Length: 528
Image (cartoon, rainbow, N blue to C red):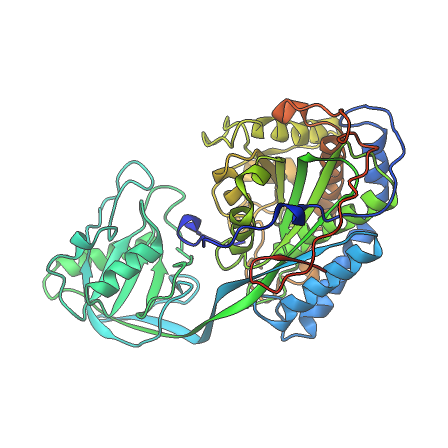
């Protein structure tokens, strides 16, 4: 999961996939079960089959893969390819015909730690605390004066309320070779950096906007390669640099970055049940890649392992599927949600419209967890998902309430793979247990754990190992996911008004279309 991600700037147009590639199937019959909902017999059966031990077996495998591949499973590395091979192997053994979707993506790596310093008075800023390199930053080591570009100090009352650096005209009269100081706001980081480079800046410093919740360290992606150093900072650092730049003598800084970028290949893995109507598909997805810095076992081995075990047991236990269930393991999420965006954009419009709901599971076992449900109806954060998303939220709310467990809404912030589905008006939901955000005293009282500490102190770090996983959260959420998938596989009427039935669409009717031929073209699904 990316930290502060303005994802709309990263999506790439790709070739359309043939509709026939959506008939990726599993063998296995599904005996008729009672048409009960939510806590019904098939939901209970699937929950019982999906054990903590079974999910953790996959996490152990992903940890071993990282251990064998320089401690990472990032897209574009051998560790990610081995992760894909593992998931494909598990699905095949369960009877699925998984497909592997290959696509190109911009690979980025820091080859040496970045530095950032004020020259007078001499102040070295702390990497990872005061500043961080933006993904797809260029390399360089300029020392130059700081020139603010249309920043707003103090910040406006509304988040994303300023346009600092968003227009080329913002840089009118900008002195060639200076370091541009721009503020988070309405446009993507990449747009700000590209405009700064075009204006002749030697580097660009993007600082957080300053409202509550938008004042911490700004870590993010440019979504495109730029040729100058680009770093993000806290609001406090940016405000200080702005004030110094307005005083006599101005402010001079030294920025040093060493980075590498190239186009590489990575993969999505897709598998679909053979049973169930294929014009009303329920999707469940999780990103499979880690960051380069670590093995990514909570982020996001946890979500990947949970849906993998659910997929296995869904086939093994012959759970009723009136609606086909499609599972997805995304690549290049950590590079800007690229895998899920590629997949959705590859689908013809008619095929997108056949997706009844998308459930996303990104970080479901944070060590200092809370039980977050994406705020589908918008009552908690004012940013609802497409129509039907509230019904998906309600499924999880009911599950936790029935178990006597607390839960709360979490924002559709655009930071994970549901983003492309929401933008295409597909109902979305899912679970999240927290990343770098700080747990409140109220949350500690509800869920246990430590107030004043991040939900995941190892977020995007080398210590995100199997020892970073909270087993209680993993167990609770795996069962909640199993319940939701079993419920929606049986009935999506609360989400989209579609009821099961009709010749060729019932849960006992097979879809016997041939599997698609394999393709070597980039962007086409290939049977795994």
